Image (tube, rainbow, N blue to C red; front, side, top):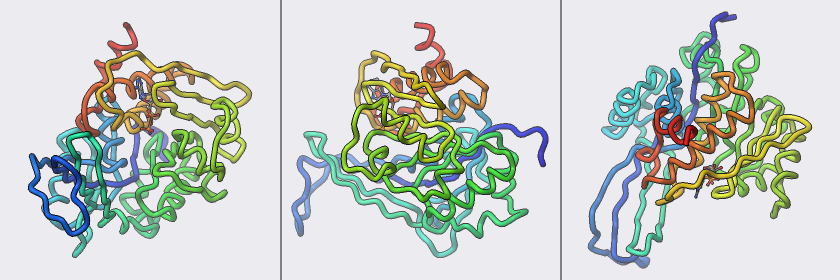
Length: 309
Ligand code: ADP
C-alpha cells in the first residue's frame, strides 16, 4: 500500500467541441452559411481534471484520445493546465471524441456527440501494475463520470476501494447505476435529472428527501446540485443545505463540472462537509459568470475571494 497518498486522479472523457454559430438551425437536408467557428476542449473528465488543477490540486488524468490532431491538442491542453497526462493515451486508428454543436441567434442549439476514443478506455487498461492502475491507487481521491464505459468506471472503483483511495462519482449524463457500483461510492454527485435516473423514478420529490434516498442506495454521501437553488449534501442523519451564491450569470455551462471538482478538492483538503459544500457552490456559481465550459472554470483565488465576500 502506498503510504503517502495524495492528489486526485480523474478517470473520464476528453472531447473536442466544434461550435459553429448560425442565424438559425439547419433543416434536414439543408446547407446553411454559418457564422464564426470555434473549437473548445471539453468532455466532463477533462473539464473536471482542469477545474481541480485550477483550484490547486495535484491531478493525474486517466483517459483516451484519438491518434489524430485533436488528440494531441487535447493532451497539450491538459498539460498546459498542469494536469498529468501520462495515462491519457492515443488509441491507434481511432478518432478523438467530438461534439458537433450548432448554436443559433436565439441561443438554441443542436449537439451530436461521438465518443470516439473515449469508448476505448476499457477495464483491461486498468490491469494490476499498469500505469493507470497506479495513478488510481496512489491518489487520495478518484473522480469519475459516465462518459466512458461503465465497466471501466466499475473496475476503477474496485481498484480505488482496494487501495484506500476515496471515490467520488458524478453520475452524468443521467443513467441508472448497478448496485455493485453504488456500494463503492464515497460521494455521489448528481443534479435533479441525474438523481431521478439513479433512483429509477420519472419524477423526484422534495430535494432534502432526495439526498437521503440516494444515500440509502449505498453511497457513503450524496450531493444534489439544484442550479440557482444551491446544493444539498447528506452523509448520514443530517442533510446540509447551501444556498446558491448571488452572481451575474451568463450561462450555466460548466457549473456542474466546477461544483464536482471543487467538492473533491475540498474533501481532499479535509474541509468539513459544510465548508466543502460551500466551496463547491462558490466554484459552481463562478462558472456561471462566464460563457462556455472549460473557459468558465474558476481559479482558486476567485473562489477564495467569493467566499470572503
Ligand atoms: P448541472 O450543470 O450539472 O445541472 P447545476 O446547474 O445544478 O449543475 O450547477 C451546479 C452548482 O453550480 C449548483 O449546485 C450551484 O451551487 C451552482 N450554480 C448553478 N447555477 C447557478 C446560478 N444561476 N447562480 C449561482 N450558482 C449556480
